[in-house]
Image (cartoon, rainbow, N blue to C red; front, side, top):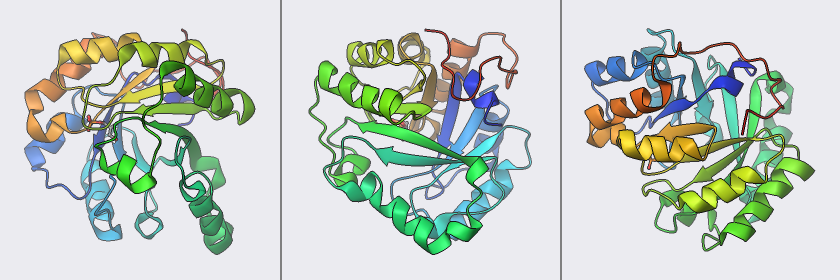
Length: 247
Ligand code: 1GP
């Protein structure tokens, strides 16, 4: 599964704390997207995560958990994405909580299924920015510098430029991507139709679509067609997990 992540161009992010009708979930899981990521910044519990996982498992699409709350780590996901916020002003969100988790649960952590994500949180009005006390006012050079620390020094496989709730600065995203050597660039924030999907996909390796699922399903589904075309989903990858995609 880690290898196949290298070929993901499109991911839907589902929030366990938000209600989702069966028909909508089916449309998402059958859309041709490469994967479903389960995660949210608040209200994520073990119960609502189990519930959503079991509903997604009726379909074949890969399903990964983005861990935001230790109490809500549920077994049975294909991979566990571990956010590490690069531009937080509190080390807790970079490594502190992670260290506590290892101390407490280290003996049962399936390390081979963990994928670190170096997060750059850039929308000051987002919940994740408030919770992590992120320094969101970075210019492109500063954002690229953080990204290079994660990519070249820490060897992180994913840099996630997160504008959750608003469409970000695509020039900044392009600058960040240009400086990466090994990491894959995920972009999320404000993608809601084919046009925004294409623009984001042009400057990143993988786009993530969240809110639009809940506000405009047809718009959300059009983002898949915009970047996937007629290609077959979940295709194999020639690159290693830690190798970069083409850029
Ligand atoms: C959120 O990056 C994702 O973590 C997607 O953002 O909800 O704005 O689509 P949106």
